[in-house]
Image 1 (tube, rainbow, N blue to C red):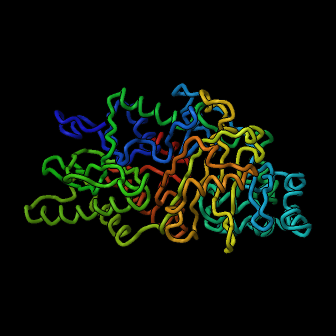
Image 2: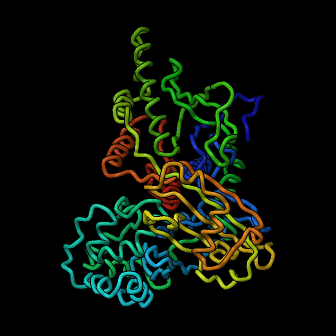
Length: 516
């Protein structure tokens, strides 16, 4: 929806939310429930961020994020409130063993860590990949002193200390690479497995800790029946029905504090965008002249580095405001906390979180009777490839139609939807741009153990997510926390999104719903 030419953009709205992802939509929904009217600005052609859909083989399916973690109840409760039924996946996943060019079934547990050290799936898989010594090393988790691993600074250190490098590389590293596009050494324990460290300190064993937090038969992820995109559709419907508005193809460039002497307001400076003409699914291109939208309240729900950049522009505007106010004998700090904005400026000047990982998802619709038996279950995760010719460079394949059968209503017999993803830390520059549908088809054949040819292909789509996987390190997280604390002191400025909420849909939605 574009702005109404008869009504000044921003007029009649109680706030402007920058960004249209799930953090923005959750905050927008919380706002309308309180009787407020938000204006949401999204630079792409649709809201939802990493959640989006497409039609393949007669079925409407997710081509972005497809599920949410159930570790806390917020998303499930939200779905129920919106009238959406939630369903579990058909989950029987595998990992790829580069050394033997074959697949290994994933044991029941958390993030590749088994809940039972004697689980035959775990023991046989680890023995086949790394031998008996690796199995015995893993068993030491039950007898090692409980202090071992307590000072782990990241997920990788914890697993290696308790279970050994073989378990880390065989089971856990493919999880980290396939889901978070990085190595376990780059992941915060609390952010990827909340409660695990607390359970480990209590149990004295990592596998027992996993068993304590992963109850038998527990469902780890869910989706609204029919697709994750149903949640976005319903949030958009509720927001707009209550008087909120979503303007797609609008990019926020910078924000300015203190416009108006008697009633200082924020101004969001924007440009319209169009879809990328050079690279399908790439960042939108700006078009036309910049324009400003005045508001009393701004919610920054952008990705990490764009959010830091826009906050820095607010701090810079305070410097200009102070200069002009002093010349005119006015109080520059009226309404806007000068010290807090200056602190944000100091923290964000020349600061960016390290470059995130570009991701390419390729969705394929194929007709194959051989896939009816789901030979590799609901999908496979792949660890970093060895530096040798012919190594598998995909990071995951999801047999989507097997994992989420409810989404396939309307599809013809023997039609399957596969999602192959690429992009991880350490990839050669430009690698994901070069991924073709043909490569994805060949890699899917290899991972699933079924020969798929172009004659089996019904439809396909590549979708690119730039800098979509950003995991701030400890030092970067400290700066972000200080920025967030300073922002709390600035009237009419709120922060939302993964960069302040934490990784994953669950954390982002939970924070957004607390908006007030």
